Length: 236
Image (cartoon, rainbow, N blue to C red; front, side, top):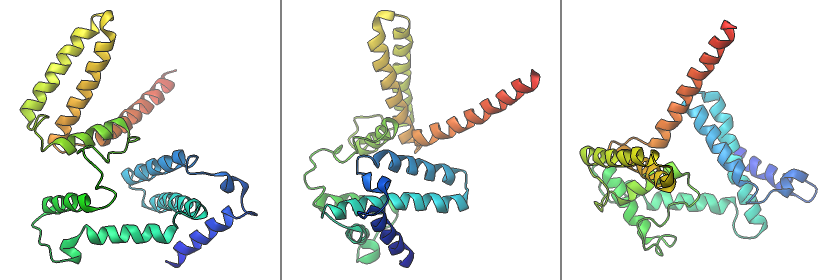
């Protein structure tokens, strides 16, 4: 904890009237992009199992939390201790099988309890829809997967592989039809979106996260293409 509060003290010094001009200029809005970039960099080194680099990237991500907490303390909303206290209380509250007397058989039971406990919390009491609480800024593919997980118990989306594949085939056939007629461009775009959503449903059923697999395929393609470029250069 000593090193953590050293970081907090350093951030206070950077934000002080005689501190760093750049750090003093930053706002919650200006830090949005940096926060997202830091998250992606953490994921990248996780995937590449660069453990020494992961240490540094986690530090960069932690800095973003401390940075935002310092800005909010200056505005007299809350401070970093409040942030730590709230997440600590949440973890204890949502794990009654560890810190209370609730019995669970497996991780499914844990998640059921987790969702029920969330409903009693003040930040969640105002939610009327299953879809409330899904971040509006979440990337589209991740959001589609989150939506599919939220609605899976309602039965409005395919619940098994065969039905899901049927939905995919229907969208694919419409996509082929619309692609042949220039006057149906909007229909084509809409059906393309429906096909992506249907593929997400298929992934949900098989517990395949589409954004994760697409990220891996991007990496595989990038590797193949870089090898292709090297070979083309050698042939010149």
